[in-house]
Amino acid sequence: MAITDELKALIGTTTEPVIMEVERGAIRRYADAIDDPNPLFRDVEHAQSSRYGEMICPPGFFGWPVKRGGVMEVLASLTPALARAGCPRILDGGVDFEFYLPIRAGDILTSSGKVADIRAREGKTGTMIFTTLETTFINQNGDLVAKSRATIISL
Amino acid sequence: MKKQLYYEDVEVGSEVIPLAKIATTEMLVKWAGATGDFNPLHYEDAFAASQGVGSPIVHGALKRAWLGHLMTDWTGEQGILKRLSCQYRGMDYPRKMKDMVTPEEGETWWCKGTVTKKYVEDGQHIVECDIWVENGKGEKTTPGTATVILPSREAKS
Image 1: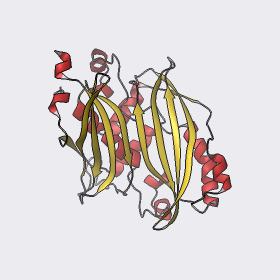
Image 2: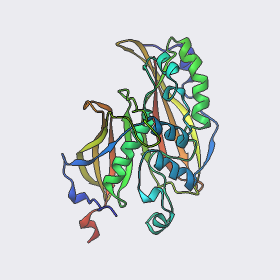
Image 3: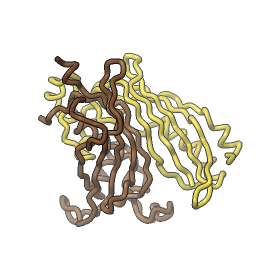
Image 4: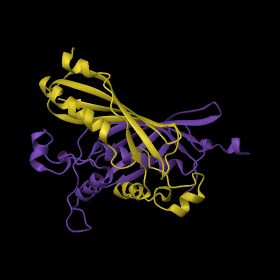
């Protein structure tokens, strides 16, 4: 089924790159929040003697705040358009991460987001709109460290 | 130190070592602070009700982070997580806190997985898994998949 022209025009929207500093304390607080005792995410000495040479990020953490600038800006422009298309409620549908290189404390990442796709589907409770947001993370050496594809469900 | 898992240790159908988690209102507060996700859906009763979920729900991304923990624990320090994907299908509701440290009686969630595929590609020993978070009723509220690279005993010798 078709999406509104207003939503169609938002496909391909890109965000201004956002700089994210990966701090040890932020990594520790994240590991602590999910009750993950892994010393690679908490113990500098252990991590430095590991093959990583430094504390690393648990999968899915890219520095604080995680959903920064880019994604929030895209959402801010999407939300009213989704509401006008009859789907004002927004839920996180899921995510697909690909990890290419470890992310270490001290890294400075540049994240860039893009509205990769918007499509509508007829569900049990009416129309649902699925928006795919693609984000890439590049480190200070210019290497691609991770990619995420997040699905936002509106209904 | 945890025991290292090797490629030779797993077969299709092998179980990922399950991991128990208890979502509490305290954990949701800590998660909000640690990630900067301050969506009131996860702490404001009236707002959660207006969004059709009844009361504040567990962040999908928190359950995804549990699945990350499941995989990094299982694969050990020499394992590499290449891909982690999941869908937030079912709502989960946190246990409330009775006092500073004690959650109310209630649900325990289990993160689980099984190996679906293993193969060698470009010299890398790759294992694919189905993974999920299961609620207290045994429902898979957060199904997903993961791909890891494991060290090999044979490649080592």
